[in-house]
Length: 207
Image (cartoon, rainbow, N blue to C red; front, side, top):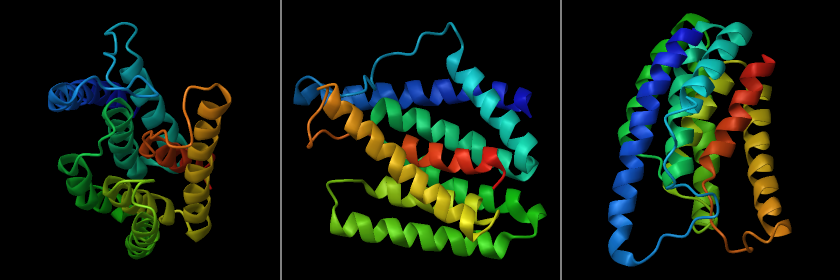
């Protein structure tokens, strides 16, 4: 599975580069782009950090919870890199991932609970988006559905922990920006990578 992750990592790098280039082109007419995390900075080809991260995530997830979750792990890694570099969670990746992840989870025997978990978490994030649209995007709501599917397949407690960890990790990063004076209370940063880190933590722990 780590080999699969390594191969997919090369594709993930290309995907992230493509969306970063598109984001930079879209912003070029609006003046300089300022980000707190250097999202549009090109990732050097060496060392192969993207490929190694994808391989590690796929391998560890397969080891801890099994092959059915590798599909989500690879797609999640791709979305995390794209969001971190561009602030985008493209529908072209997120929406097709729903049926793909659902099919991958069939062997677990927990597909009904996984689908229910996806609906519950997406609805929860939808409420948060409605209350504070400046704090997150609709892309985060759609991503929450995928995270809900993967984590709920392990159990409802896993879903709760994944959702909680994602929010805590995002809050800690925002606090770090304030403490280091690299941002203010109004500084925006991608939430998706932290949501996915929370989900990966649950999978790696085999909750």
